[in-house]
Length: 378
Image (cartoon, rainbow, N blue to C red; front, side, top):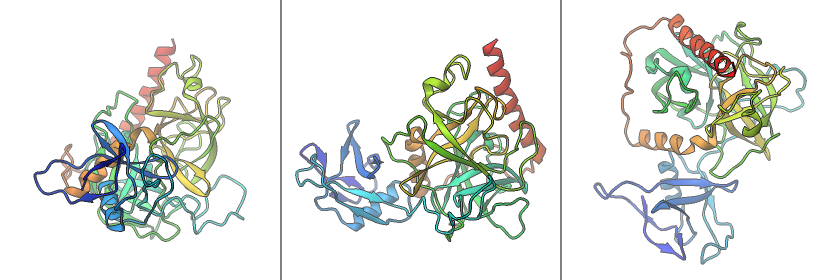
């Protein structure tokens, strides 16, 4: 689809189908807490006005954004359109916990339905990393979980569970694995990946997607978020049998880059969360899992568990991939995959890779980060 004309400096809501050979679709995004639809033209983002807008166009726009469905659109008043109305778009019911009862209190052991977007990523039938459901076909995780092992046949995504090992849990095959092209195992940036499921999920209250934030949304220092996963409860410890969770406040990049914390290594692709005094943190096995924030009863994915120096150490909070920084990449992968399915380049997917090989790689990444930070500090 593409925009037909411009009205008072903003795009109107008139589209028409793109014919083969007429060029690529213009970039789209949802902006701000209201999910205002914007389209890029000439490097400038323009707001889509309400004139001529209808639900069919909403379906088309959602598909271009990588979603398989359309929920609704509305036209709130804004001064940048001649009609006084812009287009907001909702492509997915997300961020809700319909099966979680808040009367359950106490402890850090998660209850069924408390984090329905949380998944367990199994490699050769064992839990290795976490992830977050973002649509019925897509799971978001960390690139370091799959780098060098991005062959779908060896992975399974388990959903709707709180305990491991699981008997009878819903397990889904993986059709495609995509990690950011700039990620490398000897770096800390661009630590994000997507898994496309072979079959769509059925949402039932215990399995639900979490909302992605929109462009322009900021999560301020001190905002309290939740982390969850089956990771170790101490550094170099064993993975947890039960899904655990904890509240952690966001830490500013300025604070996290201080000499006694992470010495300037926190980039725009990263966000820190935790306590400088230590004691609460994500750990090995939690990688790729969600850093989630509840915004007016709607849960949003702020980060994906990425790295840290040890677990719950003083002045070494958890570091997460900043989802707002990765939105363009996420949308692009989902849109391209919706248009065509391409095989993932990498090792031969028919070759059986021992689980210990991947464990060794993940441990080496963890050790590399610790040694890298120690060498730099010294």
